[in-house]
Image (tube, rainbow, N blue to C red; front, top):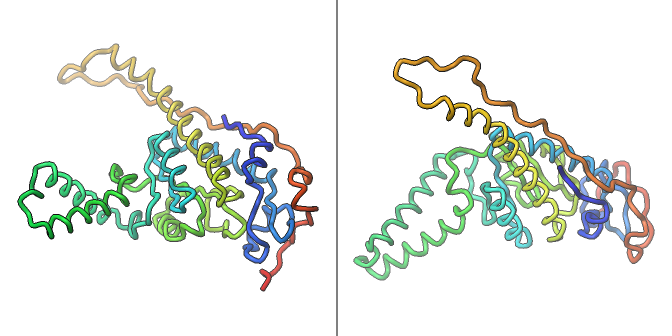
Length: 295
């Protein structure tokens, strides 16, 4: 179950958007107002979207689907890597490799090349090569290690992709849409939410905000995986109790994997946005309905 309070989101700066001149009018439905030329995100709507996304991610994980966490911005890299590792899912925190989702065969070839270089080094082949050749191979290995570390274990494209800042990760979003992979993303006020299957309105620049959203997604994945294991356990125990099947014996009818736990989530502390939460910014003006970006 997701537990995130309005206070926690305010402290993390989730409500701070971009400057008003940088907004995308399609994000207007998620904007509460503006303060000193900064758009303020409506946290009640953020809470609503978090509940929906948490349920979706939990249900997907409970169905055995795989995830890919993407965040290549400097302030997001360590957070994305840590949270993806915590829930044992793939991640991309370095430069996005073109074709990662749309040309998976090429990605696997790069992984095989990395494994080949690692084997050469372990077997001492580097020791019999020229210094120039060794230098070239070491640089190639370092580059492949840097960009493939989080995805080298993938044997097929992920089923769901979670993105921090879809504007920054536009190539990843484009490939996921082409491959028809559902996208969950933290969308700041400069994003186009129509490109995202499951948008979460919020600050995608502040480290504390990024940490909050990544931990919520990782928690949902872990809860879904726990539900999947709980559903499998009775079947596995029953099969083990039956013992090995003799040659020619027919499997007992009626065996089927138990259904995944129904996804649900509740958010504590949902309350109207407190205009006095940050008095230094001044009064809040109503959000614009839809207007052209300022020059």
